[in-house]
Image (cartoon, rainbow, N blue to C red; front, side, top):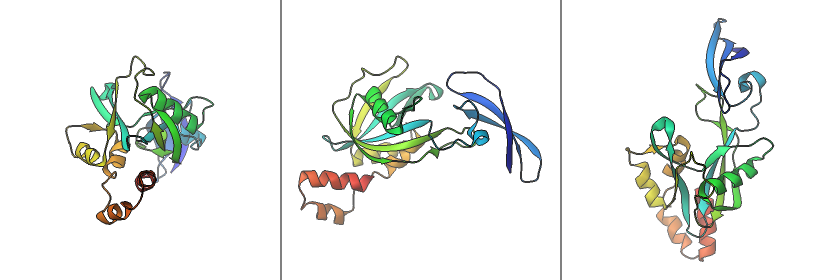
Length: 213
């Protein structure tokens, strides 16, 4: 398998289509349609190091709950459950983008970075778009002040039990990454709960963060 070159098919602001020429494993010349946010597909340039966007997985310190959003998505003609997310601006770091997007979409303040993941790909059959999963703790009260006119977002705080209930509701539409995280946001085993009762609230919170992430 070998990538040869690409031909741009559209000229849009946020996303474009390309015909990517490649040689398959039998040595035949083929074409693959690719959607990309880059000026040229990453399979041609080899520029895979920096993600296109961030997905923020926030845990609210004061409420001791996970933060998710319910956002209207035009392609779905419905609301989708997921995490705050957005594109990384030119010259912006992953951490800067995560802080900005969390504030804009939820009004919450990012207080600590827990883990920054590498670029990951969720639909490589059609696009080279990649995201970094950024696990954080946050605080404050939700606000819509930073929402754009095209955004209809509700901020939701959920416990482990509530996360399980949402994930088990087949009528809801989920972002794939959010469903995977929330489906693993489980109630700790009884032995861990018993062991944790000897700790104060602060230590309990630190343990819970470690357990989740």
